Image (cartoon, rainbow, N blue to C red; front, side):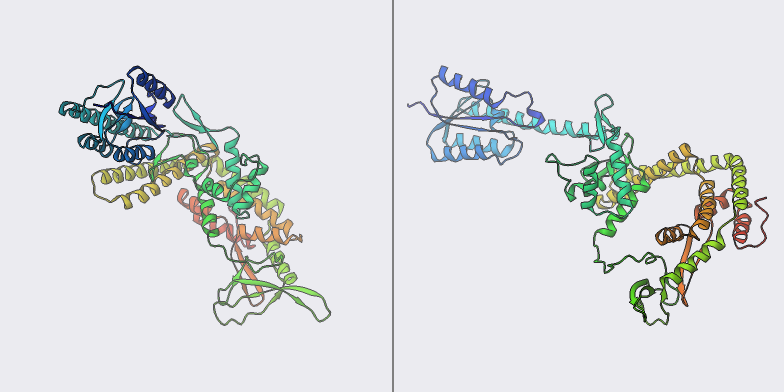
Length: 508
């Protein structure tokens, strides 16, 4: 009987479960030495670096095709697990042995003869290889689940973070994390596109290896990465991390709102600088107020503001920009407090600040209670999902929503503890803003006037060639003061009266 000729097959997976297996070069050296010692003739060599967990190896399939075309050949490999770690490829080898397409299998580390006993042992070897592979996957998944429960980061740290091998999680990079915050703050203003933000980041040193600005897709991924909120995403599900978030929930949501608004941008027809556009709406029909240039009888060019009339028939007339600016200045002058009143108000705020410690404790306790309630809801949601009471498609978005809510409450609690944030801060800012109104009333900076009205004014309307809007203390002050003091409603009402020149004694 003629000695069979052999196909040599060497494989090394790049995955974790094959770290202890020799390299392909080492296998080839050992197998060639084995063939020389055993006087084995090699027809061809097949090598590949790919996992055998699933069918689909190109070189293995090529070798099988050659075996099926041949008549009575053998295979030389380091171990049966190099040939197959799945039932399909293992069954293929055994079938070819049954049909005598393969008449011999040689392994330096495993004995085999084409007998019923040999086939049984080969099946056992393939089964052990598959069991090892399956069990290893389960062990890895179990380890990942445990890491997620501990809030650990699973992979390489995202930009802005660095891996900490001691804590087995990530932590903000001392400088790159500040770049992330700056990028989010810039984009939240609404003045940037993805392209212009990439150029802005390039100026800060964040660019590609080729020293070009980041691609728009990369910038978009960065702006939507919830890892900066302290969340870990694994297989479409978010988990709470125990690493420090880089961003506040408020800033992150502001950026998401800008992204949603820019997702379907409309072409702007505005070609000129009209500082008061976007400030008011029509008091008659509710349409937006637009602006245009017009040439006067003497050849001069003027800027006018008028109703767009997009919601139907409207009788409102146009107004020149200089007349509109004069009205705004007069309104600013009427609400501006004199320096004496401003000083009195600020002194009163300082007094309230001293009385506010007890109320602050109640506010902090309220935040803690809400945080505890959110955690209880999250626990119940997870339990219901584990028990099979809710489907996965409903579970995942609700879990993400509760995690975001928990992060937001935790940020509020931390901010309040660090800065003493309460109703007095927006009130003090509002008082200082009224001082600014006095300066703007004599200014020609129309853009700054518009920003100021948008900041402290409410519901600007344009009706009968006049603009009207109200100035009042910020809503946060009104709501929180009402919640914390039985006299808040009276004081808020008296504050409004005082700015209109009526009797007010609560500052004294």
